[in-house]
Image (cartoon, rainbow, N blue to C red; front, side, top):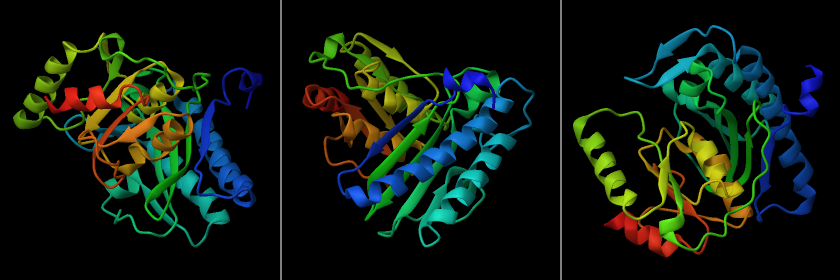
Length: 271
């Protein structure tokens, strides 16, 4: 660790769900923050180094850093919560079961934005979420490269809004046509569109007011959204299904905005 830590290293975004009482606050918060910061040290160490990369899919990448960070986070959290369940992107990709139950479950994306990481683009993060009764309750999203503070936008007009989305990892014609057709339609209704390469940081973009609207269908799994969904909610924003129904963390569909924009955004998404 070096002195830059005071300037840029300790960027973490933390939110506590209302279902936890104050007696639970310190333990449920301190442990994932500590795990995220330690994983962030590993990410920062290898950010500018040559990476060993393999392909999970046609364009979905995984590095040694992803695996090392997930092991580190799981090991640290299991020391404090040995009876809790754990779901991680890398363990799921390796074929281990990732079924979400009612039991307290930590959902981890050890390095969201792997493509950015491989290319040295500093929009990467650790995403850790805790669900209790399948409800996202605690969220930590930590970018070890960039220092940021998050609050929700007050934009009220769709046409003045900045929209964030991702194209996902599938490259079959049906998926691509569906994605591009929806984007083409939405571009007539919003100010502009951006794709960052990190679903978790896209969600935090809603919470900090950098982005006004976000939607994604077909993301990798609950680890992509578990942390960011809590942070948006606790910052005063809304997370919901693109149809306007309640958000279901087990379904690979998500939309988010401030409360003013939800109805018009849902309407636009359905057209």
